Length: 217
Image (cartoon, rainbow, N blue to C red; front, side, top):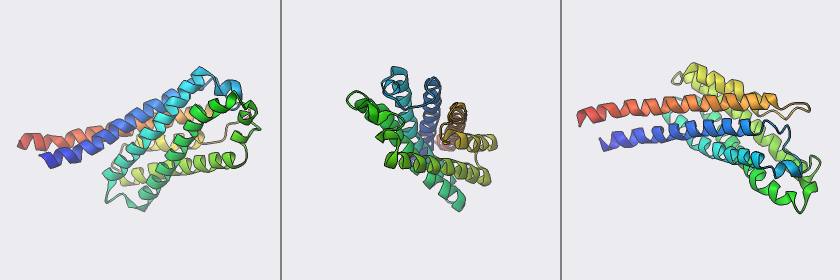
């Protein structure tokens, strides 16, 4: 019974992490709707934007634990496609986490003494930092798409949830358009919804796995 409980608790907590990640992701994108750009000292110091960045960091951190649980659930039959998607998704989530820390801590710290660094043409949005953003968002986009397709191919997660993850991953990680960031917001909300759905599925599977152990006890 103890062994069954241990096996079930891991996906359950991974599912809880994924659900919480999805909710935090949605909160982040909803809070930053008024900000079509994250550049500028005024934006960097705005309390609503900072609250959004806090959810940004939380969503990325919890997502990593959720992705681990999803991958563990599919072992050993997930296949190379799912494994590749998992690796890229975790790497992308780490990049997303770093992006959130920059928005929550680094940019506000620079906005007062060196406001020019957080302008669109400043050091925090050009050069090496810009390359980091482009690479990390590309990795996260590809990772979530491949991960979603891998789970879809494995057939053990809700088909609609996998498609929702794939559909949201692309617009969420696109560069901000000159006139609107609505596609990013919509994509982020879709990814958040997919995360909640997938996490809830993991929790349900974990609860189902504990039933035989309780019955035999």
